[in-house]
Image (cartoon, rainbow, N blue to C red; front, top):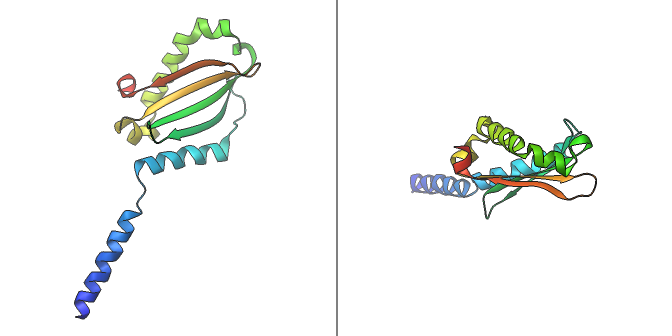
Length: 133
């Protein structure tokens, strides 16, 4: 009888702790939230500042929000260099090993750049698995 009770308690402990394991979605939400709380807004570097990172569970999308400053806070500059900017972003995303699990799971990565001058969105691009594989 004592062995059955011990086995029952062991199994119950296993099942109860298994139910509380963090899912990849939980980890994604925590990663985004923790980064935003600790580091955002970041200091301006290369005429941009990271304002926040969010994660949408419904679409499995990380969204990175930036503010553009200085000489690149100009629609003409962005229009002229947008292809190069997007190529740089996708290159960094492809090389980013810290996001490996999320990329393998097919998560999306959205980048939103706003003007510091007027708050207008200058770039809003979402990369899907087909883009970064």
